[in-house]
Length: 184
Ligand SMILES: [Zn+2]
Image (tube, rainbow, N blue to C red; front, side, top):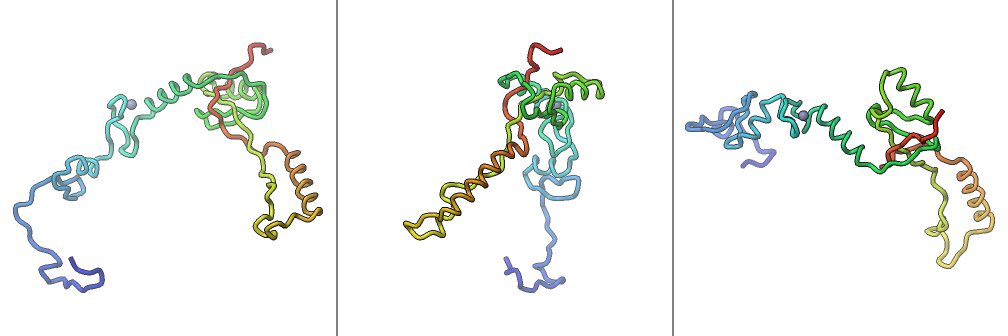
């Protein structure tokens, strides 16, 4: 092996040599893969087999969209379920949409001609803005130093204001959302 910056002339034996007696797997693109049939086939193919049903699937994927959907359905069916009383939001992974009320959900189903069950709704949990912690400034204070009263008051006010803001966004939890029994 030559060091990276050493010169190899076009006409030298090192630049290339004529090889006889080579055998091995060559992909559609002409790449030589030796005994690695799997790698050669992967290099040369556009589709592989779905892990679940064996049908052709884009080679970057493990399973086909249909099997992916049925895995999602199974996963959703296995989730714990809870009635949702329109606190916060629910999220539909099937449509990548958030809803803030059952009316919105119903409206969407009507517009898109689909059913609630197909949305696979999960209850969302709130994200809050971060508060200032008790140890605020501890790296800057003297070892047994304490925050000045004004700073303590300011932190208190700040935290109160932030708490009053409430949730600023929502993320899907692992709980499936059930419509409460009594609905008009
Ligand atoms: Zn499949």
